[in-house]
Image (cartoon, rainbow, N blue to C red; front, side):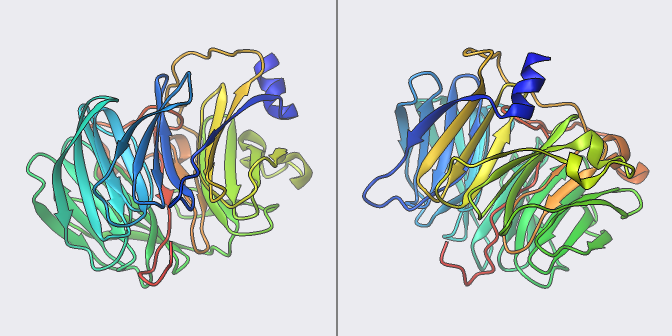
Amino acid sequence: MSIENNWRMGKFLLQRINCRSENSKGVYCLQYDDHKIVSGLRDNTIKVWDRVSLQCIKVLTGHTGSVLCLQYDERVIISGLCCIYASLNGMMVTCSKDRSIAVWDMVSPNEITLRRVLVGHRAAVNVVDFDEKYIVSASGDRTIKVWNTSSCEFVRTLNGHKRGIACLQYRDRLVVSGSSDNTIRLWDIECGACLRVLEGHEELVRLWDIECGACLRVLEGHEELVRCIRFDAKRIVSGAYDGKIKVWNLVAALDPRAPTTTLCLRTLVEHTGRVFRLQFDEFQIVSSSHDDTILIGTSSTTLNPPCPRGPERAGALGSGLGGAGSMVGGGGVGQLPAALQGGNVNQGSGGAGIRWNMDINDGNSNQ
């Protein structure tokens, strides 16, 4: 109960990592676990920070544009110019504004080597996700590309969005993508078919029933673009260009009888710039911003929280769109359609296990 009260009251021990350098202009993406924080910066680098000392222990170079997205596990990282994600054993994938996708082998936080560079997109690669079968990337060129994880060979392109794609999540056979055309699309990765189109975004936070496509609730309160959203079984946490992080009551949001005044539990105002990325677990919130900082807010009841685990599936799909942002989806109401069920769920460490990271770039952005 004390931990829950801390969430409601906003009682966190705040730690700050200053990422400012001569060429630094913002921290676009991050992922963390019990030992490290991995961040992607606008200065084209990937930096690994010790979770205890908060000191930088490794700098990865190779991208020639901002690092927008990243996904890693204990041994591999996939990176791109837009965001950072969780990954399979021994692999990290990153993507970048330089239109490339980099696949890395990560033996330890201090031993990370570049395995392969994937090229094919015609604009900034905003987001990547992967499992043991496929790497999936989305770009400002309006396309989603599928690659074989083992061979890194190109498989197929998913076409349909009318503007740049901001966020994406891949799970089993299902790919969910969000675009600045204000739509969310559901795809079958095996055949490339678009299964459903969800419409209605206007720079708000919306909860969707993934089975029928109905909008369950609209959450209002941010004053500017909602950039990132994560949720677990109890709460939704959103970050926006207004520099604020809001904690929402998910249970109340799914109850149509709950008054709107009960939905927002707390607003955290600690960043002095746009919030680009956040992750959270039961004990902490970790966020990054245009102000060149990473903030770690830890529940004041525990200075040494246990290793983060992916939260339980929530009963809906939550999204934030309108230029840039991120989405997070769960099971329950939002379980996979029957035709797509089966296979392994890809869950990364540090915060919600299912997620859509959004750093939108239509190919003309200055990110």
